[in-house]
Image (cartoon, rainbow over all chains, first blue to last red; front, top):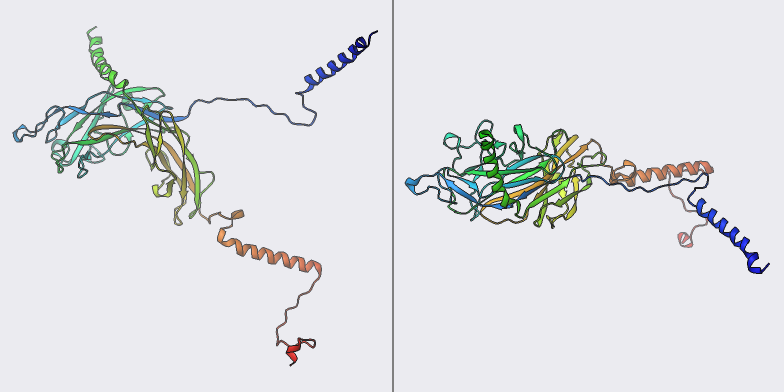
Length: 214
Length: 207
């Protein structure tokens, strides 16, 4: 028998031993611990809101006193108590987990940075009462009312975040993930203004907050 | 049929108004949904690092996100005075879908009342907006919770205040020395009386 033939059984034995080693490799010796890594994915747990657009103009202004040349005109608010509406629909998207969505407003800031207008509320138990006639904004006060598919927030927005009760049906501000709501804003101006600026800025903010049961 | 038309008309008008808005750039802010909670209890006079709060820009426009402490969501407990929370960084500038973790630290005044405290960590979009008209802003809130219990601040080891550590160490060393001396049988006598010169004293003592 040639020498090369004699080496075949030895090679087969070596291969068998090696194969056994491969099979036995993952097994743990008695008394030793083993571990396994398994990846896991979770749903996003972020509370967020997205608003579009980020800026709007006030248009369609009405009211005021034509007798003293302070009647509203186009995109210019008149006195006393002229009203304007935002130029576009505001799209509010709950881009996070289900949450209550609050709404709040800021003081109106004049371009000269001097005396602003304070947000006020009409109706019972107001955060800041409107001091003008017929529950309307008084001097250096203004009111913002938001409206949408489910009605309008009659008493007006406050400077503290409060449940945006026109977001859902029956006065609910609960928004689930991906929910899109369209709102508009109506501004009621002051009885008169201490500041003579003709350019004013107001900021309305939507804030998702943990709900009462979460 | 007439009823359906009446319902459809206002809705269609709203949709037409919304159409251009949907194509505008958007602003958005997100915050972690899980509460910011101090592990363990806090003590009056103590200073603690709170877990950093996760914030994200969910809008298409760049945003500067600032942190404020306000109580706006329902919950029980005393309101956290905002002055107790220090935010370690200025407003964070974030691009679309960019996120950051903002460190917070809690300082409890010495005379703080014990009990459960509750407020919200509010992430606010603060990017400068054009003057005039209506700026539409975003924010997002998550709970802030911790408990203050009476007692000294555990700043040292084993709950011992830092200022007391040298004294405690000295007492422990003295006690250990006493035990060692007692076990070795060495007797230490402390005598009170006039000091006398020893016979084999230094030469200059004699002179």
